Length: 206
Image 1 (cartoon, rainbow, N blue to C red):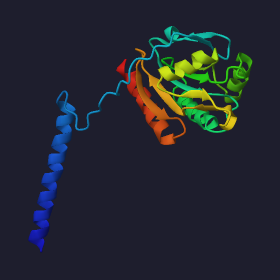
Image 2: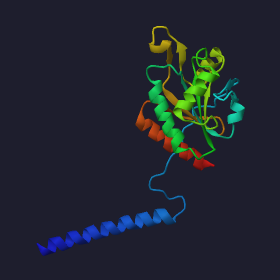
Image 3: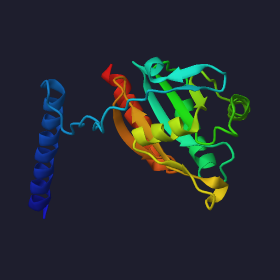
Image 4: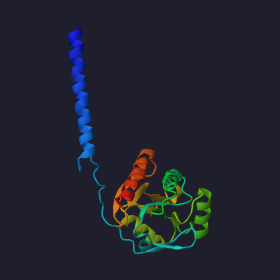
């Protein structure tokens, strides 16, 4: 019995040594990584030819976002379904990167007739956000709907839908070069957790 215990102990010790050697090699040898992280995929470059207006009455267009990472989505302030959940999740992103000037959020209203600059300003005030970090934008309806298509998302009027509109509940992550690097369900906490992590990956790319 004692011999069996001794042999088992020796085997466990050898295994522990092998594991330690592997960890040391991964740390010391350049390019050696036991769990390499693949770069985020690229879903194409988004080109937005329009200029919108945010809750502070300031113009917002793609040129102004160039060189910065941003998250885009579509909503309307009177939405009775998914929008409140989406905005709660977007607030998590806002708070996670509150001190970073390299990330901005852009939420496009799909009901510009109701969501005027004043309405968006009031909505932003209730959220407790800064327009410099999170733009709530309005504009010409057809241009906003076309913009949603350019992000690969949906936005349309439907009188039979709750609130009179249908739109995607996804967040689009866009890198400094204007490339879409990911889509995340804005009502899913776990997917937004992943989005928050992926933003850090893009920020670390420099």
